[in-house]
Image (cartoon, rainbow, N blue to C red; front, side, top):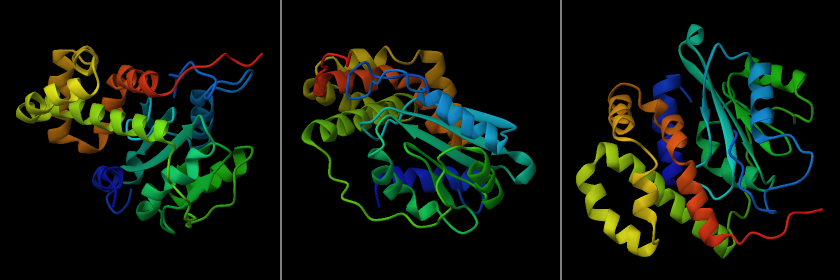
Length: 245
């Protein structure tokens, strides 16, 4: 089981009891003209669900591709969470879903679109099916796919996972943070500057409090401060090219 899958099981178990967008990289691999932003896509799906309370994920700090997400909380239904994720690259969806498979059940099925997916209660997912254009049939099956990445994408994924871990450790495990930081700064020159400039001290303290009382909200909180780190990793390994005309 991957690190992301373990985190998701822990986090969503806390939020759901029994179960479980607007920073865009400026490079042609991610950009096309006149397309809806990831935030527009994810928020339109959240509106179809009808989220009484929600938090945003400003990027995926466990995967190379640009993502925007919404966690919809419905405390009237026992605090369960419905997750919405939109990715820049449609090919990312079946790869990312490999980690979500353990959380997809008949009670919490999956629905997908061209470059997005949602996992939630059967009733909420059914609303998405009816209201969101391009939605697939509802399913509990995630097809097995070749999830190997190009060397560049694998390098970004590894870098950004180190960054997410460092942001987390800075607040929650200072000894490990101090031990690993010189090594990571040598591996990725400038890493220390990016990590220490990404989150102010008071936010690090707030992250610590969240970890003690509401671990399921760690990922959205960290995502606010991981944007610069994601950009740092992507700029290091994905070469920009001229934008399409």
